[in-house]
Length: 252
Image (cartoon, rainbow, N blue to C red; front, side, top):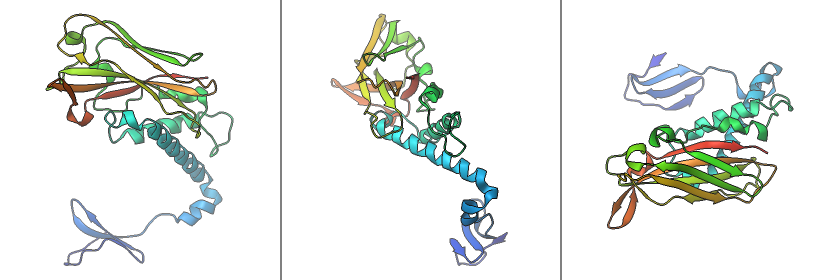
């Protein structure tokens, strides 16, 4: 591998040489390697590569559709690696399709349960914020979803964050099949809960979604930290400590 010693700094490709900058070494040059895109697209020896690439691309597309639908809740409740984790999980779901051939496999509603437990923000897990079990239910017949936690003691059972005075819970219902007819999510938030409160309380949040019997429904639960100043609530730390978890997937 060549290293550029002169004052000339190059980035890009000239003939069979690729020029680039390394963080540790500086500007370098190397010969182009690898198989051409044209050969991968046509050579029978790369059939499996094309199949894998097709399904990987499908997982990326489906992930983008879901993230677009959930953008209002992901804005302050997801980290910058969530899209990669979601695509990876969706690829596994696509690979579970037992009907279509390799390269043509798709999302099957029954396999969507594999999304359960996926954290949108790995810096802050829902189970580490609320130390008491949260219960979610979804009535497919009427489209009502419920988040409950009885006798919750905020001072003891909700993790505190420096500067935060209150926390708020979110219940999100999102149908998903990957087609263009998927509805926007139903989102309902709880009242602001004072973190230092020592009296037990019953957390109850309900959201409603017009049900489609042929689609999976994702039930997500999220939290957000706030600071109250002059009777107004301000979100803290750009949401980096907020949680959002796919708590349940209800299949057709």
